[in-house]
Length: 446
Ligand code: SF4
Ligand code: SF4
Image (cartoon, rainbow, N blue to C red; front, side, top):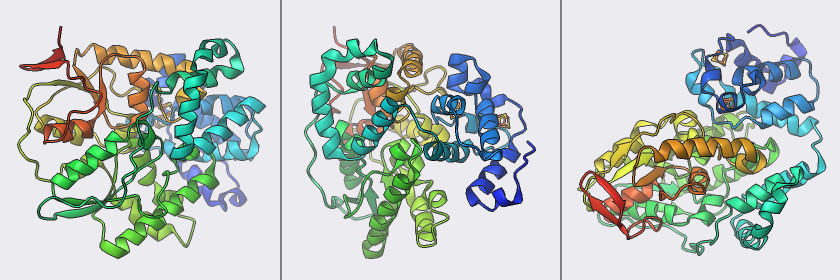
């Protein structure tokens, strides 16, 4: 694609990076076929190619964002299916990140939208605040149907409906988990923010499994916090970079003190962001090198587990599991083989839902901010998952677990919980004991 930026515009490194991305796009439109918003809405401006044109026009003309571009960029899930499909290697993620930061700086949103976004940014990344908010949501839930009828309050209604009815007790354990037996490695485990509140059992299962495999697991090193993905996707660039710097410092201290073989991440949305720290902090001379080192060490838990020797599974084989590959896992991190391979080694029969490339509509805060498109994508995803007739759904992202779990009775668990169970750990709490194992499947007991 031809561009017409001036030399002065190109002296801004953000513009220069986006220009290089834009020039790679050859307008072929292959990406439209796999874009969930284009598939759902059928509007070219809600396709990757349409958004690329809008972003190009805004940046080339150096103008502030307007309502039209904000509407179509806000509808983008950042699922990155377009990047998997694109034959020309267009780095849509970095382009839309730049557009979102530009929108945040130049566009004044309506007051309710502004207030909601500010609230999400100030609550979700902080576990204590998020836990308190979930308790309040339980009180507000009866008003959700009423709020759904008021256009400006639809996101609040969606938030109340998504909040779990009960909040699991906090996991207050911290510090390193020693390896059982001979030590074979040392890793840091990102505790995360929303996941640690919604389901602390995921990180507990990860630490247990790694410990049994001989790996020392560092938890909660001083200074570690939210990876910054939530605010990054809202265009709040300064907050995202601050979060990244804080984590880079925390993990660098651990590397210096005891060495780290990997930084293990159990939420694929966070994994995509931490793996991008090198790019996010490339212009910060104090952090560029350290951030690149951290990004290179970041691994989804399944990427690390496939490198280890696994024992013989401790549960009867043959349970059918529908594997839902989160967008951030398959498109963001390109981790596709490892979760399936591990589930197979653990004795599960992996079933693939149709349209596996399409987003479930979770996408960070998307299911709150764009509840109508999100609900359509969720229902389509649930239909495809239920058609597999699997007894359990496995995925590697808490957002997808919450989204899909809100619309199906099929138990949905994190992949690592199934692996921990299969290799000697306890049954995941979401898998009821009333499930009975039959050869080649596992079905609800009559
Ligand atoms: S990131 Fe997803 S929703 Fe956004 S343009 Fe690409 S395919 Fe479409
Ligand atoms: S597939 Fe790639 S090159 Fe083709 S229109 Fe989409 S982004 Fe551009």
